Image 1 (tube, rainbow, N blue to C red):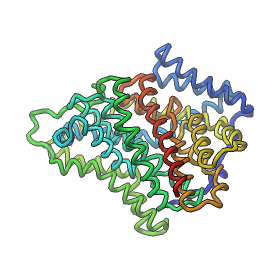
Image 2: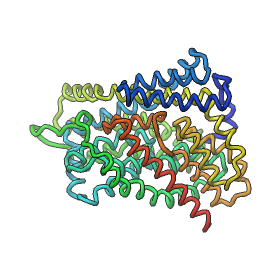
Image 3: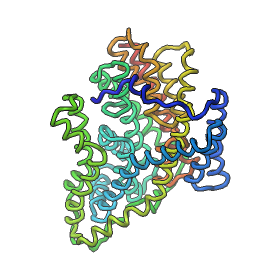
Image 4: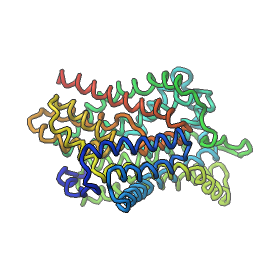
Length: 465
């Protein structure tokens, strides 16, 4: 595991771009979010423009200089697109290859044949949890969404009945289970045992993902009954294809980035030596960019060439895969810009200062701090890092199991109620073709259920360990 101490994070912190007091910052946050919601819901403004205007309004309400607000927003937009945008593009290419070659048809037809009716949501949550174990949330989404949309369309299922379990599986893995970055940072900051945290994390994750996934999806499907958006559904491969890739080759191609990232995570944990040659290699091939790029390159042969595609058709397939995601990239990037503006005006520090005087049990305190920072900044990672830094001194006299539960409490809090300042909110909204209100009633509520159920099981475990 790569060491990342709280002291290192504090040393990298920058001064807020405004000298506003906590009261003004609180008002600025509420006003900035209100501007975004109003522009989108009332004036039907495109989410990219609304997020941009909302970020500028946030800075203005906080008393930050316009130039520094613009710098914060553009820096956040740029880093988000750089980190997530390329992954979305590579995922779109892989999804298009899967669709045009008939590989996605093979996966969907097999899933529909093996699991149907009531079993389908459970199959989706299982697949998502396995794939999401080593993957960043955004990577898991771009790999799973084409399959989710096609299963919903082909099997005539409610999109929420299929999509919510998949999203729940990815989100729970992201927030509670190492080797994801958030839990790893918290483990390092608190001094918890990684193996114990992983074991207890799985105990908490299993019932949490069941409740937030297949169970909640029944209600989400009633609240938001929408079909899979046609523009996002990979079209069924042409019937004039001479052949289709085999199921084995298709699954192996989709799981290639999963395997590469899992290998990196395991080597980082077992070897834990950046100078080791094996770890250096896995750090490269297991990075999300290289892993997805490798899957795309392999897919050109195992999917495209296996379906009889010529070089020209492969080129056309890649070109056509990129156009539909332009709007998604801009919206996700603007969400990252808004989040960075929140961080730079000092909202995270404001929450930490407020929490210093909260006299409540440590596990619940850690969860509440993470919840507050998550709501304010939209970043699960920022919430995890900040909360772990604050409560780390309280872990000094804790047992091994309770230190691990402290990490899980922070992870659960970091997932609470994703909304308009979270890039993931916009990613889900655009891929599923929902309105802001529909996204709140499904995705945001699902995230809240994960957070609340997660802390409940953490507290229950603390009574018996």
